[in-house]
Image (cartoon, rainbow, N blue to C red; front, side, top):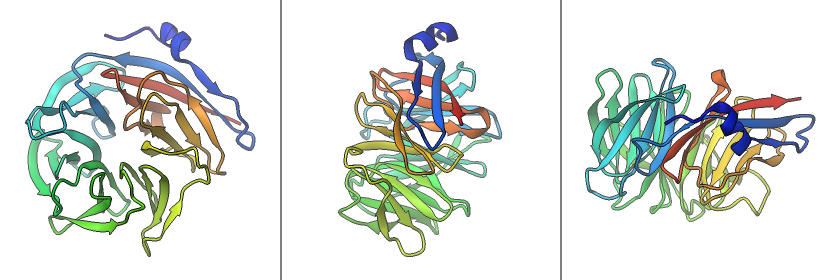
Length: 280
């Protein structure tokens, strides 16, 4: 069911008025849908097909009940169980014509042209708790392991450890920047591709227990945290502000730069879409 934009704006509109060296971000709800989802965790935009995919955990165990939904960009549920038979799908990434999905203890590859599972890549560690997936500009695929405190890389058809560290506590959201891998877990870090040096992403001790990180297309990032907490915005100049107050959990978000649209699967089994406006 879709809600009217007018009602949604009244209920959920939030503007971050804090100065960002002359910039502020305004977020308003466009639509939400709450049918066909069971513990939606992640959403990703398929630019080629102009469609969204939503992962549904539905248990996070070897139960075969997890699935991927297909949704239009204007908020219509196109297919609830577009791909089924998964075991707790969470983060996703697209490279070329393949959707890669973190599925508990393996990386699942789905052919976007046929919607068939084309490959499964088990992690070398037992019970890694695979969580998020990201792809860098050259096509390198990285996967976070929450339980193993490890970031894996798909190499020669094997999911191998790329970096393991106790600092990667509760390894969760990933975002592949041009020269560094952004990581959010208990703390937010930036990890150099060149030497794997781990550095704080932002100097803010209150930014903990995090869920996801996404580029805003302007050198900054949107960040979500576990629990009913705000969606945060970190500007290119390093200023962190509350972008949107929420009374429900925001899971693994997606920001579509070309549409200025922020998408958030939520703890109440809904998918929300927001418009984003940067003001200078």
